[in-house]
Amino acid sequence: MSDKFDLIIIGAGPAGMTAALYASRSGLKTCIVESGAPGGKLLKTFHIENYPGIKEMGGAELAMVMFDQALAFGAEYKAGEVVKVNKDKSVELLDGTILESNCVLLATGTKERMLNIPGEQENVGKGVSFCAVCDGAFFRGKDVVVIGGGNSALEEAGFLTQFVNKLYIVIRRDQFRAEEKFQREVEENEKIEIIREHVPLEVLSDGKVTGIVLKNVKTGKTQTVDCSGIFPYVGSDPISDCVKDLGVCNEHGYVIVDRNMETAVKGVYAAGDVVDKQLRQVVTAVGEGALVAQQAYKEVKEK
Ligand code: NAP
Image (cartoon, rainbow, N blue to C red; front, side):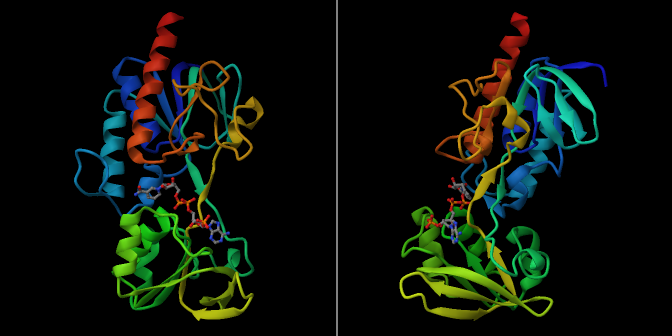
């Protein structure tokens, strides 16, 4: 492909899709590159109830509406995995394609962290799942364990209780990290038992998950919880390998940007969960995506 784009957007989550909408609508030659399905973390979210203007909508449904709108003004969409962003704003894909651009937006989000305990990796798809929305229905009438006490863990635990017989939430401290609203919901849910101050040690299986071994962080005592499903929700790590060589990430891999979402490399921007910031929400991601489109527009017009 020899045509040069004005803006290449890597990642079709809320930040990337909003940037595509705004950039193409303002006349920029825009391309989104995405390696999976469009929607980002929305696809793994049961419902959204804190996006102004939409009282409640399924995550996947909101993703499809955003995607339609993102392409409505002429933005191109390419399926592919970006392996490198260069200083000259060219973008290299895994299949060897090189796309040229004036500006690049990294909107790749984050990837769920694994527990890194014995038995976990080999049981992914056999009872270990990182997506309650995708796999919850497989655990109808079964007992499951959710690991973690953040917003994701508690929100998805609540979702899972419509299917399961019993759900254990295991947290390593004596308190949650999640917002109080989610805490109240899980504490009031009769299907949920909270196991505090325990960490997971090992996933047990006989070809499918049969249980999990937990250790009390204070006493060191271990216990086994019988279960068919294990959902680790212990946070996530930024997907920023493709900009590693640009030196724009902090020590954890999150991308450092200025108030215009621009990195230290002129014309290379970041938006959404991959950015080093405080609040990771759909509403912040879309605002950042719009801002990047506006900055790219200014930059291209100045040229
Ligand atoms: P998070 O907020 O970082 O929470 C991770 C949880 O996992 C914490 O409870 C943490 O315990 C625990 N944990 C981490 N490593 C562990 C380990 N090795 N073993 C056991 N437990 C471990 O991650 P998140 O829930 O995925 O949320 C990520 C971001 O998305 C947050 O900014 C969150 O607010 C946002 N989010 C928002 C919504 C919403 O607004 N509806 C929904 C989902 C996510 P400690 O607390 O002890 O560290």
